[in-house]
Image 1 (cartoon, helix red, strand yellow):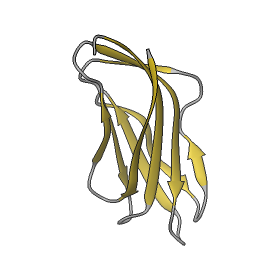
Image 2 (tube, one colour):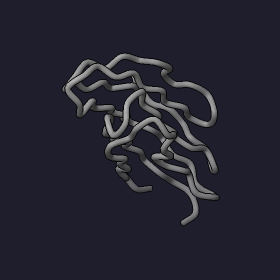
Image 3 (tube, one colour):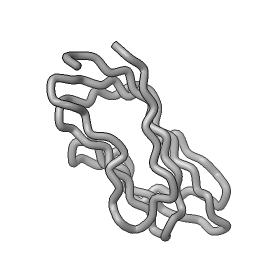
Length: 102
C-alpha cells in the first residue's frame, strides 16, 4: 500500500486525465481538490470511471472546492478526468491510497 498524490495544473476546456489506476491495482480516493486559478468564476466537470462525480460545479474566482465527501474506490483501468469551462483555469490535486500488485 502507498499513499500517492496526482496533480494536473492549468486544466482547461479539453478533458485532462489526472490519473488512471494501473493493472492489478485498486485505489481508495481520499481527497479531490479543485482550485480556480483565474479572476473569473468557472464551472468544472469531474468524471470517475466514466460517471460524473460533479458536473458543472461553479467555483468562484480564486476559490477552491473539495469535490469528494468521504472516500471512493477506483479499480484497475478507472480514470479520473477533469474539464473546466475556461482555458488554463483549474488546478487539481487527487490523493489516493493504492494497493495491489506493483
